Image (cartoon, rainbow, N blue to C red; front, side, top):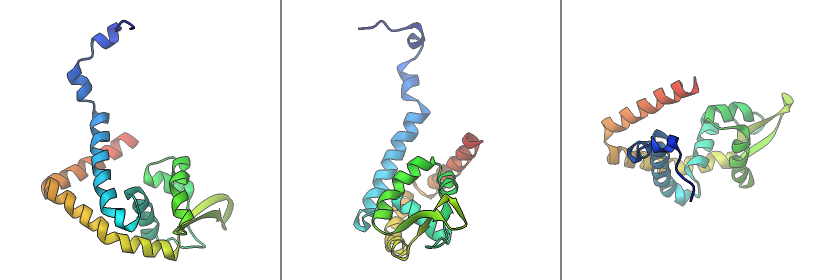
Length: 158
């Protein structure tokens, strides 16, 4: 067994347990599970629902879409991860991922009519998950959490 170095000697168990990243990841997993369970009857995960929601509310449709890079930035992910996450939606026919007719060098993503229907069918399930979060946390705590998350996203991205 290797000897513990001086750097790790200075780390306390308490410090390690209070790691911000670990707490955010744990909370994120719990929240994701809640939303995934709520959306399960629609056959969607919260990530898939979020992509459909973004495309549906951006007004995209087949023949016009959002560039992969633009959508990836808006969703806080890299283009490769976004492309991987889009594959099941494309396979189901809910999204198209094709060359942008305005610039053939760019791939653009758009929601299909079937995708818009899937989004609208799943929206009440998502709304129930939102209501469940408010019940679990309370309206004040939920509002404060969302405000802190927005501030954090802005400061970390800067």
